[in-house]
Picture 1 (tube, one colour):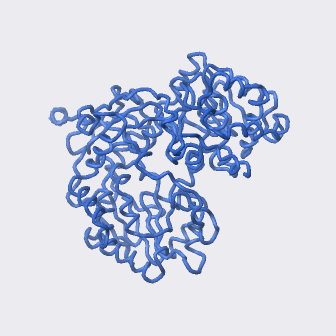
Picture 2 (cartoon, helix red, strand yellow):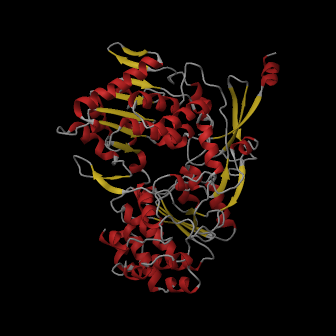
Picture 3 (cartoon, one colour):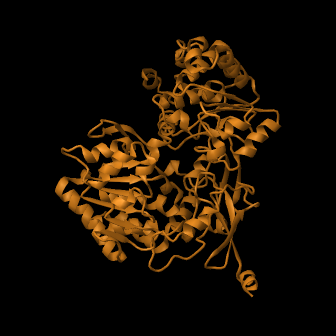
Length: 571
């Protein structure tokens, strides 16, 4: 009877896994209360039946007995459950107390990576940040992809206008400091990278990996070249120099290099790396001059090619300059905005046209004098800002969907810093290495209890798609969504908010983030696309392969690529 009942009550739910960037389609069998199975969705136009082991963890996460379902307060006798109204009141009072006693910037906030995987959170986090009124902001961006944002802001006019490899059509992929088989891309949303790289080789193309480690990606590559750690910048300078010495920049220009024609400073790039010959960097990098020259020749003579660098490039001393050089190599060889090269996604919800371009260095951190980016200080500054006494010292803190004690540099020091705060709050559904220091933890619903649309990662997708998933399970009446927590706190902290802000918050409260998503779709580049159409297409909608987007993609007013040579030449 049990099996008959299970079969009778079985329902099917189509969803996108939100536990990494890959946006894999999944099929969840359930009985209305419990997940029965999680498998791949072969009809998903993006992942086409691929999933990794993370997808099945959605059930584990939802059913975990350790997951917090109610707000908890830390007491001398351990954690104590409290009601939402009391918890929110105490959090607001704690924030206000710190700011009244020590100043507005004495309360800090850290936004973790899961925020960008959360539809409601992404669309409403600004209300929480605005209401706290602090300049002491930090996020996971600085330990991951910050160089990508800075370079894209400089060159293309917006921190999110980041081109991605057209991996589905390239003939030659050069991967530097990246392991897309493990990451499913990373700033290149691409499920089933193993198959995509195999496909390149199957069409007589080539995959070349440059990495100090023999990674999963290196194991299946056509070639793997070991490089001494932190010498990528010298290799890239030598490659750029060789591109000019071997005449490939001139050949690309003769073949109508459209991207280079949009860059007024392109003439200065011929001399940018002139002092870095292949011979001069060979001993330092561990890659011979002959190999460097051959890599350049193969890259430039391939029918199509793309150079992609990721974490290993970004998180070293010259990470910013290195990511700049990767873009220069793609530009001067005519590979930017070309099929099989580095191309701009065209997402259904146009985040670029509905957000600020970003900025660098308007302010600097109090202790270490590190520049902010778009209002966020680097996470390495957090601990000192709490521990070093003086005007502006952080006395209170909030973490949102993050565990920086575990995920950021020098976690032990940060652990000590959190323990010495006057007041701390965490928005999290687990007691973690970080949230254990909080006076109050506010737990949002699980991923399966909220609607999902990838506002962020469609901006980095290697194929244009759109997919909406309604919540699988209705949340309990005693639970709150992330966006509800943000708005409730904002209401308590910012009672004098402008009328327009109050109206927007009321609309979201009544209609939910779906209202904002629908408006974003209607204002997007695909006319006629709206939330209703997505609801009627549970597997998602195929919006087509990446297309040429220049010069329309450029956000500088003059519609040109600003190479900002002086800034990078100094580095």
